[in-house]
Structures are given as structure tokens and as C-alpha cells.
Figure 1 (cartoon, rainbow, N blue to C red):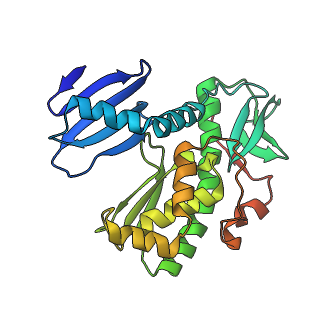
Figure 2: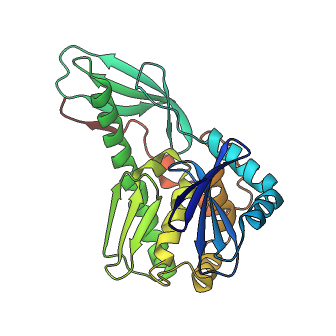
Length: 269
């Protein structure tokens, strides 16, 4: 075992990293964390190492199931080569790379089930990624703007500022005092109803800043299937086929799906 003050880390069953936090709490909790991949176990300070192992064994099935799901959900490294699969709103698009004489500004757009990169010269991997993410950003902001407006009106809250950025450990964040919301651009790869769930979650913090019982009452009121949605966002993986029977009818389709798919974005090489 490796100890850092009240934190202990070790490999459980020889393969799963366990990070133990001993705190001034009454009950024990388990969480799966992705960055880096590990199981976080929060325990009362009085729990012995022997009792810890009994606790882990008792929840062995839960740990194994979610660990396997998270491993399946690990992002595959994208190199932006011809024919590579890239997800947009939960659907796979196949990358087309075209070099066209006379094209001065590279562009990125969708055509059917293909994501097209078009430029006058061959672009590096870094340039291709930047072009794709600029396209993603524009698509995401269009969808997010509409969802924020709808949900803020429905929930009776006001957002003074919102923004989009790539985050490593969060899907979104909210500053209740400033009434400012940030959303993770990586959500553009997931289904649109998951974006709506995250938006509702962040807007709920304008009512309740913490994750106490009052917060979850707000979630129950404005997003009844939030537990199933949270589970899919945490443990589902790209390409998962999910039954939408538990979702409100208006969540199943989005304005973004009805927009012309020849939308494009241009960028300097």
C-alpha cells in the first residue's frame, strides 16, 4: 500500500486501483473515477483495513461491472486519418479528407454519414483536429444555446453567462453567484438528451449550490430520469443503443437533428 496522509492506494484483486479516503463521515461510499481510472472509497476514520476489504468484497460485483464498463468507455485515440470513425451527437461519422486545388481556406462539414475535411494542401494531424473541433464548437453552441434557453425558462432561473471548453474531469460547472455556466465540449460526441441532462444539472445549482437532498429534489422535479441518464453518461460508451422509452417525448429529437447537414466551418490553415 502507498499512503499519503489520510489517502491510501493499492491494487485490489491485482488489477483495480483502489484509492481510500478516511474522513470524518458516518457511512462508506464507492465511486468510479476516470481520470486517472480508479475506484475511490470514502470511509469513516474508524474503519480498519480488514473491514475495508470486507466492504470491497461485499460490493465486488458492483465494482467489477462498473470497472469493465469504464474500460469499454475509454476513448480511442483519433488520428484524423481517411475513413476514421468520429462521433457527433452519439452517431458515427466517417472522416473524408479531400485536397482540392484552389481551396484557400480549409473547411469541415457533414455530408450524409461522413465528416468532410477539405483543404488546398495536406493538413497535419494537429490542423485536422483543430478544424474538426472548431466545427464541433459551432454545432455544440447552436444546440446548447437552444437547450439553455428552453430549460432556464422552464426552471425559472436566469443565466448571465455561459461558455464552452474542453474539460478533463467534468461535464459541466456552475457558479451560482455569478450565474455562469460552463459545458464540456466533449459532450458534442454524446447524445443530445445527455447534453440536456447536464444543462438541467448545472441549472439546478442556481437553486441549490451543493449536492444535498434539496438539489436532488430539484432534479427529480425537472429531470425525473436523471439517475439513468447519469449512469449512461458515466458508464455508457459511444455507440451504445439505449431505449428512450423513459425519456419525455420532446427529449428524443432535437432541432439540431433537423438542421441541414451541409453546415460547414472554415479556418485558416
